[in-house]
Every structure is written in C-alpha cells, then in structure tokens.
Length: 498
Image (cartoon, rainbow, N blue to C red; front, side, top):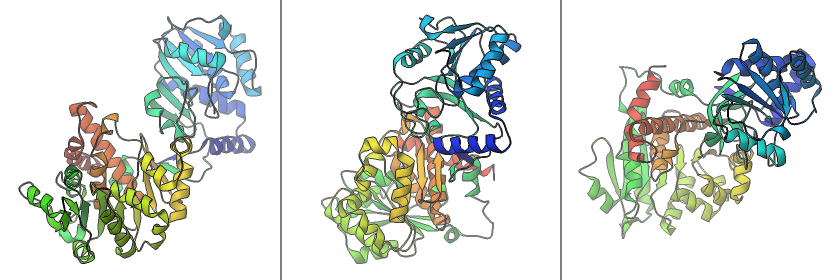
C-alpha cells in the first residue's frame, strides 16, 4: 500500500520536513529532478510557470532540460516568485534560458512537450483569466504534456475541476493526494507516477490498495481442507423485473470464482425455476413470492441464512415494502458480515439509517454517489467535492464499512480508509455492482473480521476484472457478464504474487 495525503496533510508534511532537516530549496531541486527524470521529453519544451512553488519545480526542470541539450523556454505568468522559486529562476536566467510572458503567448503549437507548472496541489476554486487561457492553450497544443505534482486546475482533495490541464503524464511529488484518483482525475490524467523526494508522510492513514494487498487476502489453499473451510455465502435478491441482477452475482459465479466454498442463491421461486438449467455450482433456495417479487417471511429467511458465513442482499430485489422488512430483519438478526446493495440500500434510506444502530453483525454498504446521497442526506455536489471526509464521517457515526463507488472506490470504516483505482469507464453499465456484491460476499466470508480490507480487495478485483473485459471487448461493448467472466484470470494473476 502507498500513502495518500490530503492537501493539508501534504502541506504539513512538507513544512515539518523543511523545519526539521531539508531546506525548501533542496526539496524543490529534488522535485524538479524527479519530474525531469520521469518524462520522455520531446523537444522543444515549453515550461509554463505560475507564481507559486510549483513554478519553482518548473525552473529546475528547465535547467535540467538545458543540461541535457534539449531546447527549452520558460513561459512566465509574471515576475512574482516564492523565495525558493526566485533562487532557481535566477539560476535559469544566469544560464540564459529564454523567458517570455504569458501575455506574449498566443499558441503553444509547435512545442514537442509542455511542462505544466501553473498550479500545485494547493489549488482550489476555478482557474480564471490568464491561467484559464494558458490551460486551454496547453490542451490545444498537441504536445506531450507533463503536469508537475497535479494537473493545474484539478482539486487535490476531490479530483473535481471546471478548467484543467489534460496531461499525458502527471508526476506526483512526495505522496499521492486523493485528487490524483477521484472523480474527474481519470479523464484528465494519462499516466501517473509518484516520486519520493524525502518527505516523511504525516497523515491519518489513507492508503492506496494495490495488487499485492489483494493477493494477501488469498493465501494458498491447503490440500487438507474442504469447501466448508471457505464458507457458505447467501446471495439474496432478484425479481421478475430485475432477474439479471441476482444471476450476475451468482450464476456468473462471481462468488465461487472469488473463493467461496458454497454459494446459496436465494431468489423468488418462479425465478429459481427458470434458472435451474443454468445453475451448476451454486445451490438454489426459492423464496416466497407474489407476482415475481419476494414476500418476506421470517422463517424462510432464517432457513436461507442458516450456516452461512456472509450474506449479500438487495441486488434486483425491487423497491418494495417486503424489501424493507427483509432489511430490518437482516440487520436485527444476522450475525455475520452483511452486504447491503442496490434496493437493500434504498430500503435502508427509506427506513432511516438509525436502523443501523440495531445491527447485530458487521454491515458493509456499497452505494454509488446517488445512493449515498439518499443515505446521508447530503447533496450530490457536496459529496463530489468532499467525498472522503463525508464517507468517513458516515461510517464512523453508523458503525459500518462504507464502499463508495466511483471512478476510484473509497472504502472506509471511519478509522481505516482505502482507495482502489482499478476499473474502466466500460463498467458504468447495469450489473457491475451485482458482480461486486458476489465477490465481496465471498471475500467477507474469508475475512469477516477485516471488513474494510475485504471490501477494498473486492473492489480491486472487480475493477481489475473490468479492465481485462475492456481489453477483450472495449469500453463500449463490454458488459457486467464480461467482467464476471474475467474473474478467474484476475484470481490467477494475484495468486502468482502470493
């Protein structure tokens, strides 16, 4: 795992390093060198500098480009500098590196590369005026664009922007910020790399969940074991109108192929009858129904859950009064890890999140931003602009693990927070969350005492499977079923790391 620091935490870490052992001027030199070495520069290069410390990194980049024999020019907003930045700018002018003002610049076409050093991670608000014009010139240049630290105009905490640079490469300096992953980051950042310049991270512990971390959740299986050792999971949901949801979670073997010993598929009786020819590995448990929708009966649900190690509820269940009854029963009675998704979340929002205080077992909620808005009562705009603190606050106050879906997935129990950045735009299609629920139930059955890590592993596996489906089908044509079909390859991939 790698550390992810908020903008404030990164600023604090930087200040502590400077006051303790490394002068700011030296950190700026290290940052510029890291940015220079990370990129494959195409000459000539324009280094576009604002007035903050980010510009100072750019001056060091310009010096190193000149030393490497690569033609370079500095484009300056105005002759306004930070103290450390002024030192490096003076070094550039002493070396006679060409400098001109933004006001003299009408186009950046003709440059092979552009270094974006306008704003750093401390930027917030909206890029306006000359800064917005220069950002548009960078985006229209056709050059290879390298953003220093973060793309100018992109918020380092939220990943939101109104006007921002589109980079081919973003070179994060010191530690990642959430804005490198969240919301719009994937549409603005091409490749990204983080360079270490010797700043010890000082933060609350947001971690980037990676392949090695997912692999650690699946140790090699022993010969002396049986299916019961890996847990029985119950996947409960489905309705005549949304029959595909529960089938994706179970019939595509999302649960089985993620490590569960036995998958118990619980769905309305008429739906089970239609699925009999398709069900091989999973076992069917018919639920009482009326007109293709589950009718909640306590004794039936108790029997369906008997002997299970984890359960997922809500996928395609329908937004009905009976779904609400089932959610209340599951929270009050089920002692294992309980995943609530889709209509399970809608029912919880309708009943009120105070119901979570009655939960007998571990609860994992898997909302997308719209569902989280209904659960939390927060408007969508506020969630987009402040997703991690809001997710942590909700998880902490309601004693749950929250998996907030998005271009990057946030997983938190209020104390431990993980981000996963695997996935593809092609997963923005019906059924992707159902596949995730099947995976998560299986991982939770193995690691019920570590729900946040189980949820992060499931999100990582689901996203990686989506990437493999995209490689085969493309973002437009891929389906959730393609993601489920790619799960064995992902599990095999991470098992080789174990």
